Amino acid sequence: MTHNPLIPQSKLPNLGTTIFTQMSALAIKHQAINLSQGFPDFDGPRYLQERLAHHVAAGANQYAPMTGVQALRDAIAEKTGALYGYTPDANSDITVTAGATEALYAAITALVRPGDEVICFDPSYDSYAPAVELSGGVLKRIALQPPHFRVNWAAFRALLSDKTRLVILNTPHNPSATVWHTADFASLWQAIAEREIYVLSDEVYEHICFDPQGHASVLAHPQLRERAIAVSSFGKTYHMTGWKVGYCIAPAAISAELRKVHQYLTFAVNTPAQLALADMLRAQPEHYRHLPTFYRERRDLFIEALRESRLEILPCEGTYFFLADYSAISDKDDVSFCQWLTTEVGVAAIPLSVFCADPFPHKLIRLCFAKQESTLLAAAERLRQL
Ligand SMILES: Cc1ncc(COP(=O)(O)O)c(C=O)c1O
Image 1 (cartoon, rainbow, N blue to C red):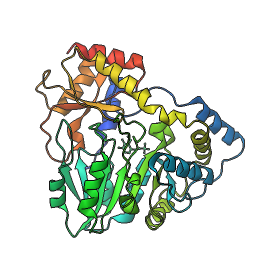
Image 2 (cartoon, rainbow, N blue to C red):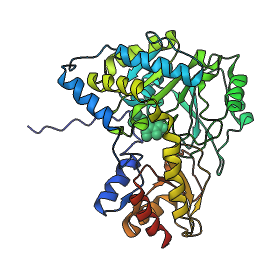
Image 3 (spheres, rainbow, N blue to C red):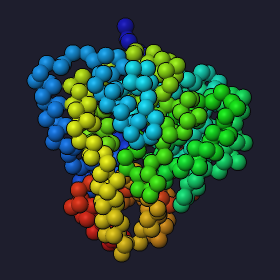
Image 4 (cartoon, rainbow, N blue to C red):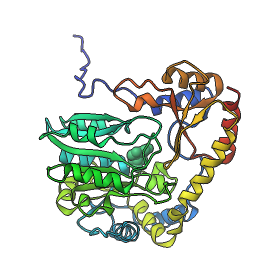
C-alpha cells in the first residue's frame, strides 16, 4: 500500500520565504556585506548581558507571569510616563511579548474579525498582511509616494467604511525612514473620531528618531490612546534583536482581549531576559536617550562616504535604514538590481517593491546602517565603484 503524504491546503498561499531571509542567505553565499536585514553587527550593552547571566545563575528560570514580570512592567510604565506624558497602568495596560512581532500578531488577531477592513500604509512592514489574512480581514492599502511618503488624508478618509476596524501605522517608518508628526495623529483622530476604529501603532524605532521634535507617539495623543495599541521592541533599542522581547501598551479592555491571544500563543516570555531588561531600564536610562546621536553618527558617516557615488540618498528622519535611488546606475527592476548588487558587487540590500502590494515603479533600495563603521566604509567603497 502506498502512502500519499498529506499536503495541507495553504492558508497563506501567496507567501513564500521572506525577502529578508532570501537576501541574507544570498549575502552569506556570496560573502557580501549584508546591509539588507535589519540587525546590528555590533553587540548590545555589557551590563544587560551581565544582568542576564546574574538572573540565570540566581535561579530565575521558571515561567514568568503571563503579562510579563512585575519589575519590567513597572519600569516600562515609568519610562512611558517620562517620555510621552502618559503613565499606563503597569498591571492592566502593559503586556510583555516575544518581540514586537508577537504583539502585532496578538493585536491583529484580537481585534480583526472575518470581513473587517484594515487600513495600512504601503510600503509596509511584512508581518501585518499575513496576520490580517489569517483573521479573515481585508487589507486596504494606501500607497505613499517617495521621497517624503506623507499620508494623503483625503485619500485616507475616502477609504473609510462601516467595515473599517483597524488602522496600522508605523513611525519611525521602516522602510521609508520617515516619521509621523503630531499633526498626522491629529488628522488621524479627526478622521476616525466618530467611528469604532482601533489604531495599531508600530513604534519599534521610537528611540531611533532624528526629527528635531522627537518621536511622536500615539500614546501622547489623549483621545487616540484610548483606542490604540502601541508596540515597542527591546531588540531595536538594545541592539539585541535575537532576544526577541517586546511589549505593547493598550487600555485595559483592549489589553484584556490581546492577552487572551498572547496567553495561548506564547503564554509568557523568557524570565531572566525580562529581569535583566528591568534592571537595564532603571540603571542606564541614558542608553536609549543617546540612541538618536549614536545612530545619527552612523547615518551621517555612511551618507558622507556615499557622497561621490551615483546613488541618491533619500531623507532619513528615523530608523536605522535609508532609501537610495539607483536610477543613475541601472535600468534593472529593484529585485534584479539587489540580486546583482549582492552577487556581483558584494553588498546586500532590500528592494523597496517587496513592501508594496501594487507594482512599485521606483528604483529604490533600502540600506541598513546599524553596522560598525568599518562595515559601512567597506560597503561604501564598493558602492562608489558603480
Ligand atoms: C517596523 C517593524 N516592526 C516590527 C518589527 C519586529 O520587531 P521584533 O524583532 O521585536 O519582533 C520590526 C523588525 O525589523 C520592524 O522593522
